Image 1: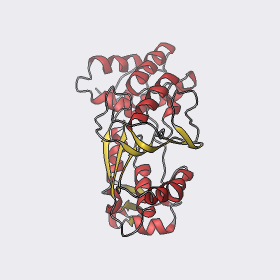
Image 2 (image 1 turned 90 degrees about the vertical axis):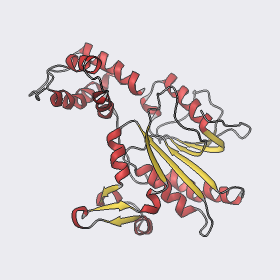
Image 3 (image 1 turned 180 degrees about the vertical axis):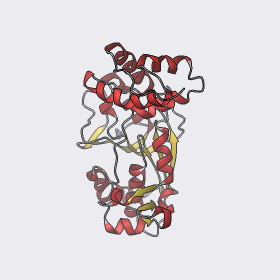
Image 4 (image 1 turned 120 degrees about the horizontal axis):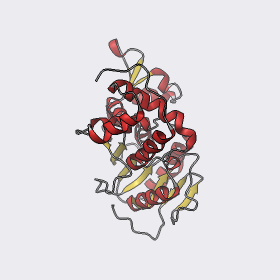
Length: 288
C-alpha cells in the first residue's frame, strides 16, 4: 500500500469501535474528550498503510494483520509515555531516607527485588536502581534486581539503549550525574548513557498488565505502578491492584502516581504516604 494524503475524519461510530478495541487490548478507558487524541495518534498509522478511513484501519487490524505486527504498532500508538529521571521525587526521597535505612536495620537477607510496571523509556527503573545503589550501605553485598516492563515495544528499545539527551538529566543531582552517567562523545555528543553498573541491575520485558497471566515467578519488595491506574475504569483498577498486591513480598511497597490512590478498590494495603502503600503485615504474599 502507498501512503495517502489525509485520511477522512473519525466518525462517531469509528471512535466507538476503536475505543472499544483500545480498552480490550490495553485496558485503557478513553472518554469522549480523548477522541481528538486517538484520531491524531492513529492518523499516522493510516497514512503509513495508505488507508483512507478509520473503518478501513479497523478492518485491516482484524482481517489483514496476520502477523500481529500492526496490532503491536496500534498499541504503541495509543499508549502514553510521559516520564523523567526521578519524576515525583518524593517517592525516591522516601526510599532513600526511610525505607532503605529501615530495611538495612532489620537485618536478614540482603536480597531486594523491584518492579517498574510501566517503565516507558527507562528513566523510572534506572532512577530506582540509582536510589538503591546510593542508599544501601557501602561495603555490603546486596543482591539487587529490577524488572522493568511496558506494553510499548518502541519505548522498551529506547530503554535498553539507555542513551538520553543532556536535557533529560538537567535536574539530576550533580553527584548522581557524575556517578551514574557517561557523557557521550563523537556521534553521541550532546547525550549521556546510563552507566553499566546501573544498566546491569535492570531487565526489560514486554508485558501487558491486562494479560490473564503474567510470566513472573517472583515476589517483589518494591513495585512502582505510577500513572497507570488513572487510565483504567474502576473494575479494571480493582482487579489490577489485587494482582499487584499478590506480587508484593510481606511488608513490600506499592508506589502509585501523584493523582492516584487505593480508595474504594477493596484492598487491605496500608497507607504509608499519600501515594505509597505497604502490604498488610499479617498477609502472606504469593506470586501470581
